[in-house]
Amino acid sequence: MRYTETQILEKAEILDAGSEGMAIAKVDDMVVFVPFVVPGDIVDIRIIRKKKSYAEGRAVFFHHYSERRTEPWCRHFGTCGGCRWQNMKYEDQLYFKQKQVSDNLIRIGKLVNPAIMCILPSPSITHYRNKLDFTFSNHRWLTDEDVTDEGKVADTNAVGFHVPGFWDKVVDIEECFHMPEPSNALRNAAREYALQNGLSFYDARKHTGFLRNLIVRITRNGGIMVILVVSGGKDEGLFPMLDYLAEQFTYLTSLYYIVNDKQNDTISDLDLHLYKGEPYITEEMAPFREGGQVVKFRIGPASFFQTNPAQAENLYRMAADFAGLHDDATVYDLYTGAGTIANYVAPYVKKVVGIESVAAAVEDAEANSALNGITNTVFFAGETEKILSPEFFQGQGRPDIVITDPPRSGMHEKVVKAILEAAPRRVVYVSCNPATQARDIAWMSEQYEFVHCRPVDMFPHTQHVENVALLQRRDQTV
Image 1 (spheres, rainbow, N blue to C red):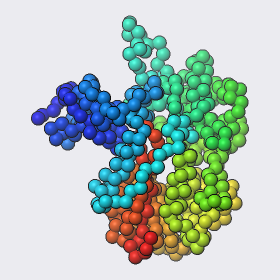
Image 2: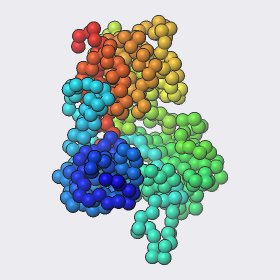
Image 3: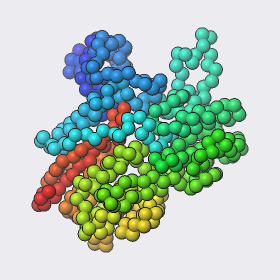
Image 4: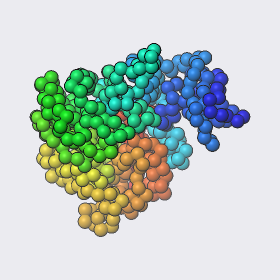
C-alpha cells in the first residue's frame, strides 16, 4: 500500500517502545513511529512524515487504552517532551529499557543469550535531578487557551524547556517534577521579576534580548547554586535582579552570573562571575566498601556531575564491583569527566589514570582528588584516542582494569584498538547508549568475552537507559 502524508491508518496496535521515546506500530510491513502512546494502545494514526523505510505519525483517536497506561501527573506532559514515558507504568518503563539493552546486544553486538541482570530501578522516580537548565524566550509555545477569540496573545515570553523539534520555541513551565524545591520557586520568581521590571527575554532567531538561561543546581546535603546567564552585558538590570533573587532566597549557597553573547548556550568557555556566596557546592558519595572513604565532589557552574546522584552512587558501586578492584591494580578511567569514578575507586587500588577531553573538567577532577586527600590519581586533558599510545602506556603503566564511560557516540575506534593493545584483565563499560556500546563490544569480541551487564535507570519517565557491562580478557578466568 502506498502511504501519503495526512493519511489515516485505522486501528493500529502500538507494539513496542522505541529508543528515541517514540512508540512503534507496524501496518502492512511499514514501521510507524508515534509519540505519547503506550504499547498495547489501539489507535488511529495520522501520517505526518513519510520516509523510504518508515513513517512518523500522531495518534488522533483511541479505540483501546493499554493496560500499561497510567495517568500523567504533569500538566505539561505531551508538550514539554521531557518525560515522554510518564503515561506508562514505571514497571513497564523498566521492562522496555531492559528490552532496549537486550535488543542492541543481540542485534548489534551479535551476542547469543547475553547474561543481563535485572535492571536497577531509580531510588526516586520524581524530584531526582540535581540540575535543570531553564531557557528564557520571547517565543512561547502557544496552546489554544493562550489565543483569544480575536486571535490576540497577551504575552509571548516564557521560562522553561524547548519544545521537541522546535529550536526556537519554549514551553512556559509552571511546575516541574524533575527537581526538588526551590527549583520551581526560583524559576517562577525570576519570571515574575523579569516581567514586572520589563527585562527582555532572548530571541533565538534574531539573537537579541537580555535574559537567556537560569541554571539551578542542588546537592543532597542542601547546597543550592543559581546561575543567571544574560546577553548584552550589565545594562538591563542584571545586578538588581541578582539582588532580588538573593533577598528572596537567602539560603542560596552560590549565586553566579555569566554574560553570553554567542549564538549557542554553552557556558564552559565563558567567564564565570561569582556574585554572592561560595564558589562551589559539594556532593558526597558513600564508600564502595564498608568502612571505606566517603568521597566528596566539588560542583561548580560548569562542572559535569551525574544528574541523578542517588542512582549515580549505585552505578559507581556497581562499576567498582564489576572491576574487581585490588590494592595492586592500575586503573584507567577513560572519559573521566570531573573524575567522579576515578576518585571513587582510587582508595582501593594502586593508581588511577584519568583521561578527559575538557580541560576544565580535568581541573575539577584534580581538585576533587585534593579535596579528598587522594594522592594516587593522575589526570590528562585531551582526546582519548590521541593520548593513548604505546609511549603513554610505558610512562603511566599498562592498565590492569579499564573503566570507560564515553559519550553517546561511544568509543572512537582508535580507543578500542588501544585497549586491545594494552590488554587489561577487565574492561568495565558504562554507557548511556546501548547501541554504540553493543557496537564497541562487538569490535572487542575476539579478544574479550562479554561476561554480564546490568541496566540502570538513571532517568525515570524517559526512554534513556544506562548499562554497565563487564568484559573479561578471554585468557583470564572470572
